[in-house]
Structure formats: C-alpha cells, structure tokens
Length: 175
Image 1: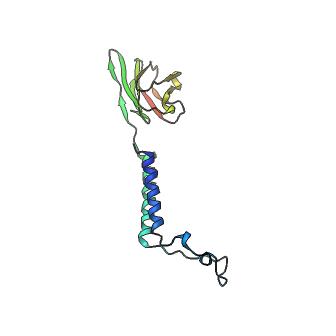
Image 2: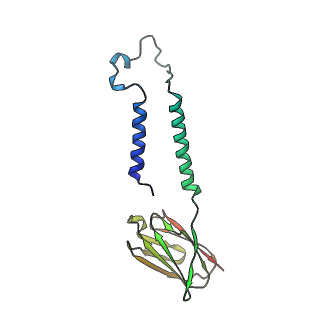
Image 3: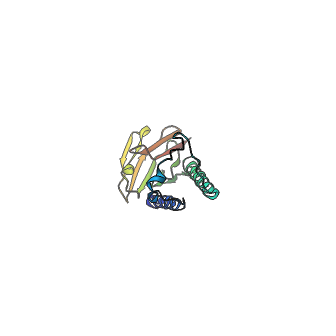
C-alpha cells in the first residue's frame, strides 16, 4: 500500500520543479512590469507561451492519474475464496488490513460457518464488523483472531461491512 506522505511529497516536488522551469519569477518583477501598460486594453487576454514538452508532461501526468483512479475503483477484482470444512464447520480466516482479504467468501447452506477475523489495521473504522442479515455486530481486537459463527439457512449473497460501512465484503451462500 502506498504511503500518503510519499504521494504528497512527490506531487509537491513536481509542482516545485515545474515552478522553477517557468522562466519567470513573480517576486523579482518590478512594479511597472506587473502593471498593465496604458496602451493595452484592460479586458484583453494574453497568450501564455509554454514549451511543448511541458504541455505533454502535464497531459501525460493527468491521464496517468485518471487511469490510476479508474483502476483503483473499477478495475480491482474481488478476491473470492471458498471456506474449508473442518469437523462439520465451514471455516476461513479473513485478514483485516485496509479492507477484508478475502472480501468474498463462498459457503454452503445449512452448515455452520466460522469466520476468523484477524485484524492488523489499527484504524477505528475497522474496529467492528457487521452482518446485518444475521443480526451480528462484533468488535474486532487488534492483532487478535476474533471468530464469528452463524448458520445460513437459505442461499443468497449476504453483505458485511465495517462499522462505518466504508469497507465491505460478501458471504455467498450456495445450495
């Protein structure tokens, strides 16, 4: 996972470098240079010349950021895993670290299910997991495994989420 301070620092550095390459420093202009001349019209726009490489770089950076955003929100695939049956109980461990891994669990109807949530992320949003269809709300302790048990009685897709409904997953119950 990318560190936020690294991203912000990189963007600030790029902005600083682009500012250095502009060729003109506003603070070093004289008062007369900053005032419009009396012969110019006050409502007239002036064309700002920029080098082609700068235009291409800004365009490529913008398109790259748009692509990254589309991949992050639309392209990342759900991670699905089938629960393993151990002594008549379907069991799986879900790692809680910036979300749920796996975020889609496949189980069979009518058999007891034990979901072992191992919480690594200290954020307050992930302190609790909620299963509204099963009327379960369970606090997850940091760096510990918290088991949640229930028995699904009919096939379907049952969502679960963090306490703030920001991170989500589903339980797919098959016949």
